[in-house]
Amino acid sequence: MKTRVTELLNIEYPIIQGGMAWVADANLAANVSKAGGMGFIGAANAPASWVKEQIDIARSITDKPVGINIMLLSDYADEIAQLVIDEHITAVTTGAGSPARYMKAWKEAGIKVIPVVASVALARIMERAGADAVVAEGMESGGHIGEQTTMTLVPQVADAVDIPVIAAGGIADGRGICAAFMLGAEAVQMGTRFIVAKESNVHKNYKNKVTSAKDIDTVVTGRSTGHPVRSLRNEMTREYLELEKKGVGFDELERLTLGTLRKAVVDGDVMRGTVMAGQIAGLVKKEQSCKEIIDELMTETEKLWERK
Ligand code: TUI
Image (cartoon, rainbow, N blue to C red):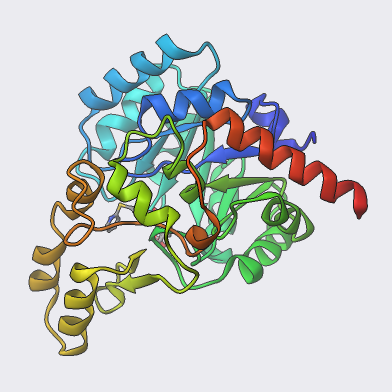
C-alpha cells in the first residue's frame, strides 16, 4: 500500500508507532522500523543526553531510520529540537502543543516534520508553517488528548489540508487501518498495540493490565486542569476523579500524578501509577513481536482492502 506517507518516510507499510513517554525507547522504535513501519523514540521529559543514547542504540539495532517524538511541554524541548538537527534525524513528530517555533530550523535541516494535532485549526496552522504531514489524533488515544473523536477529526482534517494525514486514536487492527483510510488518512499511528510488543520494555504488570482491559476500562483525568489524560482505571484515577469532582485545585491534583507514569512503566505499580492506554486496549489481547504485529496488521488490511 503505497501512499504519500510511505513515500515521504521511505517505509514499506503505512504504519508509524506513537512516541509514547517512557514506553517508546530505542528498542521498541528500532524494531518497528526494522519491521517495515516507522518507530519513534518518545523524548517525553527526558534530557537530550538520554535521547542521544537512545539514538545510538537504535542505530546499533537497525540501519532503517527511527524518528523522535518531542513532547513540547518538556523543559528540554529546545535542546532536543537542536539534537535532532545535529543527529540528522529523518522525521520528527510533536505532541502537546505547537512546534511552530522550531519549524524553520527543522525544514532547513531537511527533517520531515509531522505535528500531532487534535483540531482542524492546528492542522491548518501547521500546514502553513511547512509541516510535511500531520497526525490527526482522536480522543480515543491514550495519554494527553483533545476533544474530537478520530471518526470526526480525520475527515475534517483531510478536507482542510493538502498535506497527507496520518490517523491516530482507537486503531489497533486491520479494520481500524482500513477505516482510517476510508476517512482520508494515508497512514496510521498506533500506540497501545505497541505497548505490549515483545520488544517493549514496559513492566509486565503494565502489559497485563492492557491485555486484560475491557472496552470501558479507560478514564480521562485532568479535564478540570486543561490537561486531560486517558489511562486505565485504577486506585489512583479513582482518587483523582473524586478530588476533581470536589473541585480540588491544579497543584494538589498535579502532586497526585507526579512521577506516576514512571511508577507504572518501570516499577509496575499499576494501582498507584498512571497506566496510559487508548480506548482500543480492549482489543489488544496478546504480546507479539513488532514484526508479528506489523505482518498481522498488513495481512488483515490487505484482505479487507481487496473486498472494498
Ligand atoms: O501529546 C500527546 N500525547 C501525550 S503527551 C504525554 S506527556 C504528558 N503527560 C501529562 C500531561 C501532559 C503531557 C502523554 N501523552 N498526543 C498528541 C496530542 N497533542 N494530543 C493533543 C495534542 C495537542 C494539544 C494541544 C496539540 C496541540 C495543542 O495545542 C496547541 C496550541 O498551542 O494550540
